[in-house]
Length: 103
Image (tube, rainbow, N blue to C red):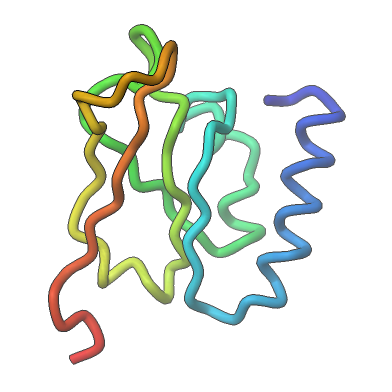
């Protein structure tokens, strides 16, 4: 995750997210664990938090996560892998939001 090409990609995503206001969700395979992503400082740049499932998403590691803006964090319920999906080697992840999250 600390390779220049990957950091450049994260900064490009930060640029796009800066135009999205304070409510956005970004999901993906970051090719890094949540802890590795936190260490980069990128979450502070975009104003986001990581929402990760409890189970690993690729082998024994969590690489597929959601990054949610702090402005939308209150609406997040949880993230879960979709266990019966036929994708390999990654397992898809679903983000669940709370009911009536605007209330």
